[in-house]
Image (cartoon, rainbow, N blue to C red; front, top):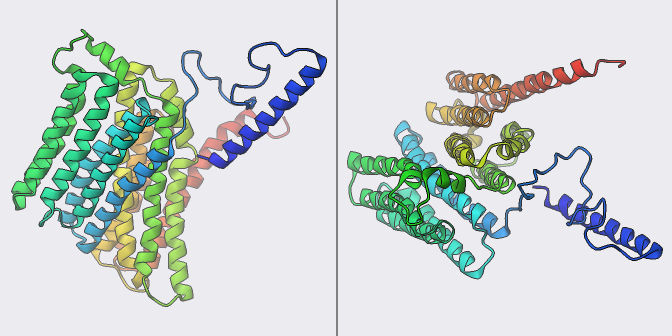
Length: 440
């Protein structure tokens, strides 16, 4: 994600290429083909860079349009925190989780789609922008989705599904319409939920969730295909993902989601006087977000890309589902809960929080850690037990938090995360010290 560094490195590589060619021109004609020691992009890879397999090209980067798409999607996450902050209850938290699960399924479908069908043509870009408009409609309808905007949400979601299906058939053929059929039924179920109230509406949302969960099975084992492709061939095609692009895309989404927790600091403070105590609370909230960022981005992202590359294509799409959908869901939901808790508490740092805000803060951190532990398990990364244990420890701070000021709970959560990172860093450094003892 360090685009500036990459640009500078490319410029430096091109300068070295020019210098090499000038020196070669002085001694004789330049032979055809790439200059020795220089990659086609003009970059000399470091000695420590892992070689790219012969059958796999270097990954492409996430485009600015895809990043723009992610910004619009994260607006739905912002609106979910608004919905939760308005009524911090278990019922609202469950509904927020239900909405995010349904929405994130289609975000993942678009991330998978643009990984295989880059938005590099005007027709694809325009369709992707239409999908963005659908997500925007959903986001605007979220705050009152269980009151009077449920149908509007459902129609926006149906637009998201139709656009995705139209784009998907361009890469996987018309047989993949069956893949979009279950998604369309889920969108119609959500639309129908806007016409009823109470448990009936919740039931239709759960039905939409069930339809989405059977979609992968339909994609792999659906009705017979005109070209005679087998399920094994479909798994091969579904798994033809670009690891670098897929990992970076979801990492960028997580970064934008963390931005919501930073925005919630300003929303929680509002127009209050900027006192030293208020700054301390804001710094603690920022430190909490930074510690969560550190948890994923310092080691997990690069290791995840390596794990993707080492996974054969037929198994790669299952790995993508387990790691970047099922495991990423609690991570994003944890950030949303944390943001709602910050909005409700930062203006009352010296007061004892109620159970709702205290659980939103502690539960948000715990959910994020649980999701990250599941992500590491799916990817085969270690250690895992520290993160699972720390998730329980973070959740356990909630009962103590209702008897302490808000800043004390923030301090406890920061200490829990920093302690976990310190223990992991020491554990990861121990094998290195064993291999390179002092004085060796």
